[in-house]
Length: 385
Ligand SMILES: Cc1ncc(COP(=O)(O)O)c(C=O)c1O
Image 1: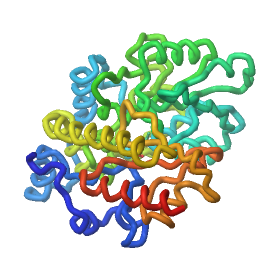
Image 2: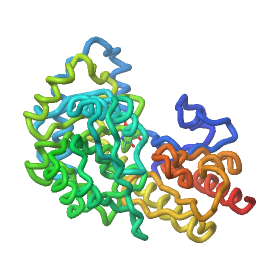
Image 3: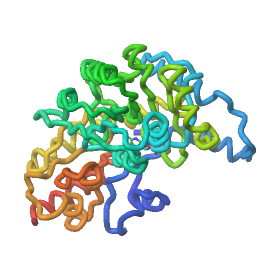
Image 4: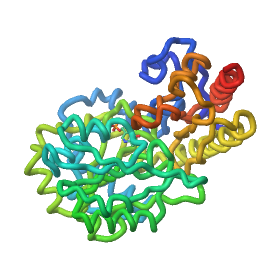
């Protein structure tokens, strides 16, 4: 081990991050999607260069991020993109809000997979749109998408689909056949699709990330792919993301509704770190992926062996485990239970959809020793309940 995953609690708590400071100091955090690791050496070098040269004047980096995005998509996913079809933006939440505002009107309906990353619900509700839920179904081995129910009950004002792929929190990496189903559905119902692919780099062996827009030009023409290096390269505070429009006409429509000056632009630290990550960070990420995979497998095996009333479908992607605690039959939400009784800070299931209070999301991107302590505390809480 080169130390990429070697961090102790004191070091992690000394970081001024939300992850380590939301809860009281006796709580071990396993919630927001940051990793308790470092960053790739290429990122450290890029940021050190900025500091050394005091290079904080208005930036001259036209097209640099778009070009790095195109290189990365081609190299990693075999997806050819034109840098001219991208827009640089501060973060994905902003990208999803602005897409909703550009491609729908207040009162329009938007489809969303549930359970869902909470800000997607906000992007629909806070802008006066209506959410139509697509509850994912646990088929006994994994969570699947059921679009069939929406064929018949067609809402005349259905305009968009917010699609999370790989999916947070279920960890699904959708197969080509599933993606084709999504694409056919979107085309049949004339929907614009926001495809959030921020977790695309964290995909485990046996699975493959296929960008939705890479399927064929027909789905690309109605898809805005939003992504960044922030999840996989552990730099979410640097605020840098890319929106890719699958056809120039889609980008023009967006530009007519959302003035580019309103969106602002990412800062130099975000741009330089993202380019360094995408171009030169893969050896570091490969090492991290090996640790994440080991953590995932250990977690699944330990839950099954030691407290089988908490189940998880082994995530195909992401460093998030969606824990089903319904069999515990708790008198309170599962997240609250593990916080109060185990001093472990998970994401509360009900924030991913009102019906999921008996679920919790556990972020296993942490050194193995900390994960063991988190799970030991949870096991103790379950045994004492
Ligand atoms: C699916 C998904 N989209 C977006 C984000 C956040 O992106 P950003 O920080 O760029 O808004 C996250 C963070 O966990 C996420 O899981």
